[in-house]
Length: 388
Ligand SMILES: [Ca+2]
Image (cartoon, rainbow, N blue to C red; front, side, top):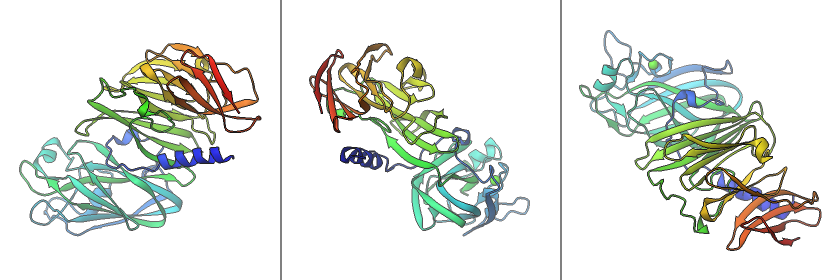
């Protein structure tokens, strides 16, 4: 690996350091993750809480938050909304795992009336192995998920603590309830890329300084993505569209079965489009505001596989390159292939970075002539300069 490649790998690693927690999605929207319900390798052991509401006819003990039963909930037992109260669950795992987050069924989900009548945690602190994560939950029906800023390595037995920092009262009662807490884990052989927010997210090399007003027409929704790379069944890319008030507007999962050390999934934004690249399928353009598909270019049409790099130039034109070549392709925001460059030299390979400049796109390559090499094309795809 050359110095330049090392620098690139470092940059990608730095870009991958997640700094975002508190995303919401349904349990079903997290394929690729393992829960205690999915495997014998994660065994539920025990539960306890700092307080439990006692009612003769109903069980509200700590174990109700871990029983897989939506008719039962842990209900704290102090006066008021239960701020500061904690419920804990303990599991035993065989081997080593990353605990990456928690799926939560918030409030009392036995029935819609129980849900509305009772209180539900708002801000909470999740604790595992001495690491704490703060997250705001929605007072929403069904599952929501909290992704940790960084995954926590667990082996042997581990304890998940859930502390209520604030809560929203119910129509009739002030007792805070939690119906289910379900840890999300991945094997340590998988690679968790965390959350990447906004422009030039995972896999992107776009330059927001280029003068492209990339949020024009899409101020109401911003997008984020998260990548999960497993060496068992390929990579998953989770994309989310968020409103200005941080409500989840849309989400989707893209799965790529092709396995390599290179990125096989990527997402980036241009104008009012959220672009998802999947080495199995191709380039999918989504409406940033709705998550609906606008156009699609197949991997065969693009002639790309893994290690995609992308950039957005003037007029929101998209430029793609990749490890296995070929040379850059320019795609209009409407999904039309504008041009394909062709260097015609197989000794210049692995286009790994595209950088839009005033005169054209600077493309960084590896080659037998020395690395890095920079090839510049003008915005019509004509070769301007070869610098090796
Ligand atoms: Ca329950």
